[in-house]
Image 1 (tube, rainbow, N blue to C red):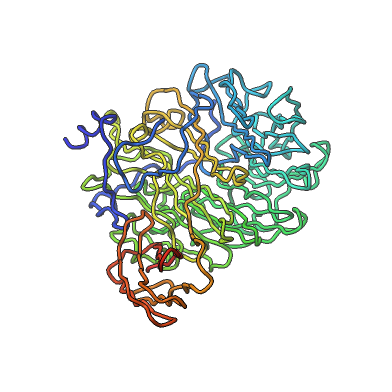
Image 2 (image 1 turned 90 degrees about the vertical axis):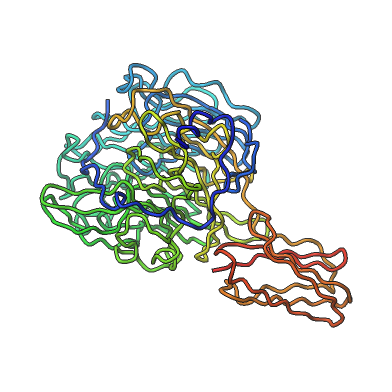
Length: 623
């Protein structure tokens, strides 16, 4: 009754008081439900809240709907680059648009909208291509242009749409076909690099047998790499299987299980991980001439074939993201997923929770690290958490429990996106956005919980900030917010997000889980959270970093001041709530505060030391 009342009064109030660390207590059926048999996926024809909620972002802009679509399958797993923020502050967005005769949508193609620095354009009324396409990717191209890549699903292969000046003018076209007899290469991912973004890089796969394709180079779905520096006139290489993703390492790649990172100079990288076979990062430091295979997940069955029997084991869900920081280090994230297999096929557990983080300074993961528990009773006891690899998990909401899970073949915390940048103090930040099941909010018709867009960040130190629900305001509590795509560039000092939303959990194109409904494509800008704050202080007043940091039970903060007087110490959590306060009348040049943190939750805290009109604020971590 409580949840039905919540649903009926969705616009009347906002639920509050979500705990920070505690995980939902697992019910018996969480660990026994076995859902959909895994099969290859066929190509298929504002205003803020009025009451406080500490997980809801207060630094988000108003939502802007930039377009619509009835075709609601934006990806089978990892998201393409659907949004790009240019250096001049303009923004281009793309999505798979279909408005006629759903779910097949014969008019399906790339929907496009552009922010000219002042306003967005009208909703598009047609696709940008001259033929039916899907799975678009947008990137800068040339001095002031842009390029989009999508697949045709026929022997025309990949369709590239480009123009010299972004946002205006007619589109030009060229294409790339696959190697015979697999000309209809599918599910592309594209980036551009070079001084003027003139070099095009694309990865895609040959159609698996289940999609009408054939085995190519001993791979049932071969992952191909192509590069062109002359606008698609020539490709070098063309449809190459890189050493590292060949049949020496696996026997299959699946739709959308791969994603590019935004290039940083000549540093290129993409992640490829279906969730059950080996997970790899392919990295080049010379613009794509040479590639290194970096193993981040070691599978128990890299050459799985039908009939293999496998116990429950921890892997991924195919939703992957990658980013390269300004030091050339690759960071990745993927949805955690538990799998097994018997003589009839392979399976996944749809109630699996957890979003996994890894960077190339870390050791490879395996099922022992990921573990086979579906939902942990206490995530802080898990291997991933203690090793700094757990980026997120489902957040509780009072006494509410999970009602049901819509079929995205994803973890409860999945669809990750990563952004790497430096804050105003030069600290490296890795921001993680993701779509997560949100407890307490569900659709009464199909009894499944809604998903919201959430976020956290880390400084690559194994510690993460508090959870933030970016669509947890009163107007989004009962909205399905999925398929986030986040620009990895920040010319406006904002995170620029594009996501899809409607009022019913799940997707119509796959399953279907509900009748066709119109979906909005939404642009959302979010300000980064502050990390360190240093206010102007007199030269004779110095506050040192607490030691040890991270702190476990006790930590010391040394203060140096040549001015005698009352020194005040205040410790606050990331929400601004004061958790500790003390003061001392200082007569000596130095004083040390000894702070007991054993009663504080793990996370990021800020301590402020004041004397007279001077103050300094620093960050500390508590484990």
